[in-house]
Length: 390
Ligand SMILES: Cc1ncc(COP(=O)(O)O)c(C=O)c1O
Image: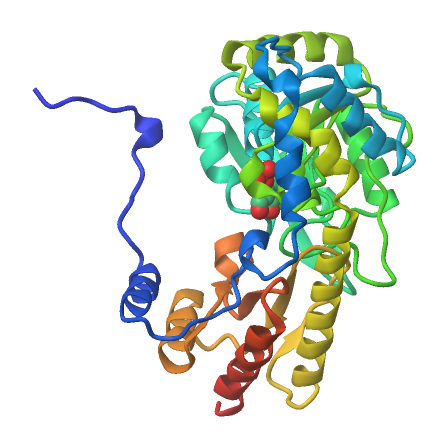
């Protein structure tokens, strides 16, 4: 008898043509201009290495005194992070997790039975599919559309609500569209959640990266007519994805019971380790310099992108308010995967095609603004060159 596996892990792991071409190119040491860069530790930023490592030397880390919600001093540091953003959050409203992904998984377990539904914006970040599948949750997309900036199609969202819907998830600002949820949209989403007894899950990992001239406030501020969970973590805020520290901040009706239940979910794993929790206050207090470096890089790259696009007419970019990415509109001549393969083969440029994030149809390219400017400039020029020949 062969061993049998769960249906939820029955994934198609065949390598795509594009992944194979990328791997071959790397193997043959051919140059790659990487416009998919999303790992800040590989993008040439100046980390204060001594201070980061010194924070790991806390003597309390030699004791095992687990708190399922996370060590109080670490939660108090997160509460201070929100106080600096004009949000009143107490340590009791916070629960630490090893990543935002783990935070989603805890919330899906808290809120959903197998087969229950969570509404999720499209286009958005693709990891949710796996997270939901692992928790036996069904993701139901609601649409964002672009009309003088990105808007939430509230009417279509309302139509997607069924008796199995348990939550609405919002990424604020969204990845990769880089738009903030407006105050009016926030109000509508909160009313819908309150009306239908749904939870609102708000992922704010890119909140601290507005583009010059833009700003957005945290869903941790203001009133909370519905049960609301705000998620964030060090992977983007402090540009430390390797440290594995994130959190859930809870608000609104039903919070006490939600936190008590979440505490048991977290207690079952106790996945946070002591050195990281003890280092978190220092890392969070000192993340300003790195955030500045990233905001400068992203804004500078956006300037380079615009200068290059201004010299031609085939490629344009959509408005971007925040985050680390820009969305380009290109002639929809080829399926996204074929376009990405062609750019890699002919120009050595690696991009994410829009379908990867659930953009409708072809003709979308997502371009990282985190890349080194020396990569970004020739990469964008190459994309424009390919389309100018059309
Ligand atoms: C919108 C969004 N949420 C969550 C994550 C994952 O964050 P973490 O590293 O904390 O799991 C990402 C990663 O890119 C993201 O883009």
